[in-house]
Image (cartoon, rainbow, N blue to C red; front, side):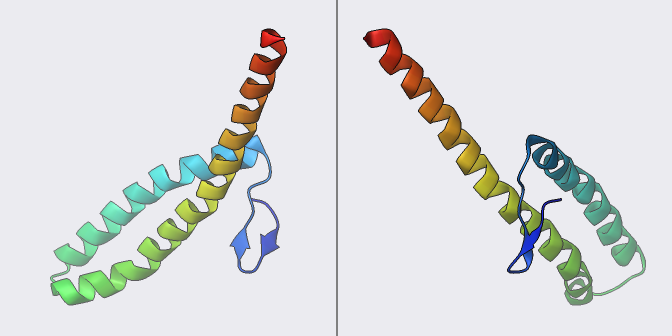
Length: 90
């Protein structure tokens, strides 16, 4: 991933973005397995929720890191399209 700034990673390249997009899918599988394991162990719902908190928090943080890159990337595409449209209309 990108360099650290104020505790969160900065996605700087398309390759880093693609890797970051794959990770939530993998995390979903890990989260489901962990939850099933905790339930199978007979833990009460409150303890299952507490045990899931770190995984869910990490997963949410990753999603938060992806969003700014997507916004910037979409903005860049929008400016390029607008620039092309302007050149065509001249």
